[in-house]
Amino acid sequence: MNQPAAPRDFVEEGRKLFAGPCDFIWAAAKIDGLPPMGPPEIAFAGRSNVGKSSLINALTGRKTLARTSQTPGRTQQLNFFALGERIAARDASDIQNGRLRLVDMPGYGYAAVGRKKVGEWTDLAHAYLRGRASLMRVFLLVDGRHGLKEVDHETMKTFDQSAVSYQVILTKLDAVKKADQAARVAETEAGLRKHPAAFPQVIFTSSELGEGVAELRGAIMRLLAERGA
Ligand SMILES: Nc1nc2c(ncn2[C@@H]2O[C@H](COP(=O)(O)OP(=O)(O)O)[C@@H](O)[C@H]2O)c(=O)[nH]1
Ligand SMILES: [Mg+2]
Image (cartoon, rainbow, N blue to C red):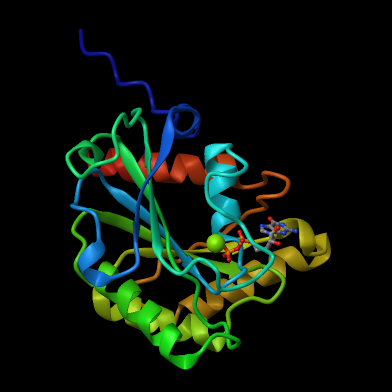
């Protein structure tokens, strides 16, 4: 007899995936220094200091996996982490293992670094976003205290042109007054309507308190399932 399949619990599957082994596998500072494509990738982009590294740490439950910093603009490269399988050695042939990769992207829009350096980061980020078949989605992080800035709209324009699937995550929910949270989500979703390729719903997270983090793991798990990976 055919039993209807039980609905999958993506939050629980995501919890298990992110509770498994997780290793830093690669840093790319130049376009020709990207790792070979392997498992599906999820990238975290956004302005410097928005909380990219903190969110990767919160997702994986490791306090120091991705380096977090009080000094904006210090992550100058693309940092790759592999989830789901212990990586024994650190050479190119071994990094094909794992179920999923998380990619901590360089921050943008920080004025205190030289113009040239910003250009280099941008070129690296764009080269990665354009040519990566294994990239499932970019999460564009936006500081929940401030909402979308001009530089975020510029970045989303390049995403729209690169045919990259992306979704906005508002960060630092704990630092936004309860009374202001719903309005921040609504105004952000309104801003996204100008961007055809943006996923229309935003997720509000706090890496500090863990809010939204289990749901985000579930959303990532669902993407993996949709891809059949
Ligand atoms: N209150 C609060 N602060 C956060 C949160 N996430 C990150 N931060 C702080 O924001 C700063 C920048 O975080 P980091 O993860 O290094 O940002 P990145 O430059 O985007 O990687 C650090 O001082 C973090 O402690 C959060 O959820 N709540
Ligand atoms: Mg960082």
